[in-house]
Length: 109
Image (cartoon, rainbow, N blue to C red; front, side, top):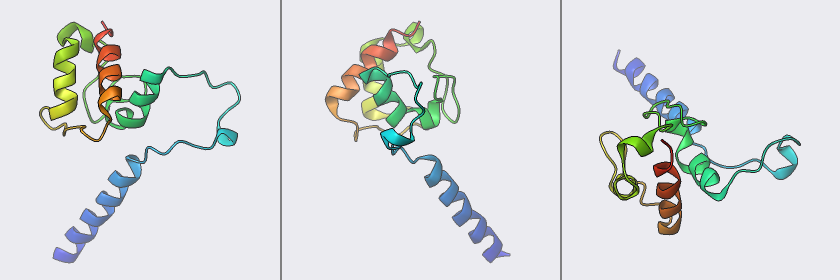
């Protein structure tokens, strides 16, 4: 019985890690009519979309479509730097990108 639980844990871990893959496809693999993303949207897609959804709609993490109504840019920066609740610190994101992301997210009202 312990072996089954262990096997399920390992499979779950692999699925979680596969979902966290943030590598972008080669330009030749991208659809021809894909709109250009802003720098802020690219940062979001590469670091946040797995948990917060590709369109800020929420997934594992909460929706961020109106996050600027609830949090200021400074508060969002604090959350990015230190985490909140089940969200871990995103300290691996460069400081300049954290700033851009916080500014962009704080405009979502």
